[in-house]
Amino acid sequence: MTALTSPPLADVLEELLAAAGSERSGPRPTRPPEGAPRDSRARFAAARDRYMAVSPETGKLLYVLARTGRARHVVEFGTSFAVSTLYLAAAVRDNGGGRVIGTEYEPSKVVTARQTLLRAQVKDLVEIREGDALETLAADLPDQLDLLLLDGAKEMYLDILRLLEPRLRAGAVVVADNAGRSPDYLTQLRSDSGYVTTAFPEADLEVSYRL
Picture 1: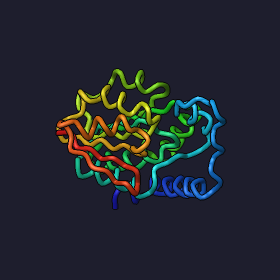
Picture 2: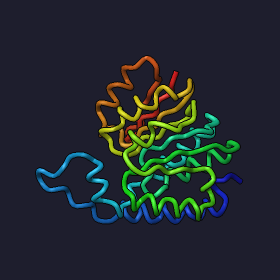
Picture 3: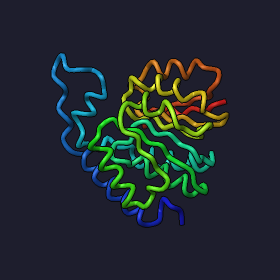
Picture 4: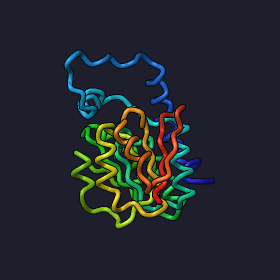
C-alpha cells in the first residue's frame, strides 16, 4: 500500500477525479468575448468554479516522477482544487516526508483546496500560498527544490522558472502542463543546455531534467 492508494487520500482523490471528469465531458465553457483580457489569470478568475485539473494519467506521472526522484521539496504553480497537490503530497509522504508548496491566485479555490487537504489528511505536508506566485514564491523556500509543477497562468511559466531556477537542484524535474500554450517557455527550455527536456504531445506536457 502507498499513500496514493490508501484512505482517506485515495477516497478524496477518487471523488475529485470523478467531478473533474464530469466537468471535462460536459459543455465547454463559453469563449470570452472579443476584446476580453487575454491574461489567463483573468480567465481563471472567471472560471473559479471549474476544476481545470490534471488528468489521472498526468497525476500518476507526477507521483512516479516525485517518487523516483525521491522528492522532498516540491513547488506547484497553480493548485486549483488540489487534485495534482494530492498526487504530489502522496509521493512526498511515501518518500519519508517534506513539503509541497502550492500557489493559487483565486481566493475561493484556496479555501476549498485547504479543506480538501484536511479531508485527505495531508495538511501537515502542504502549504498553499494565496496571491500572485511571483510574489508568494519570492521568499521562504527550501534552499533546494526537487520538483516544480507549472500548471497555472501559461504566460507566467518562464517567469516562474526564472524565479525558482537558482533553487532547482541538479536532478530536479520540471513538469509543465498545457506546455503548448506557453511557446516562450518551450523555446527557452529546448535551447537551454542546462536541461534535458522532452514532450508528451498526447498530454500536452513538457518534462525537463535539470542538469
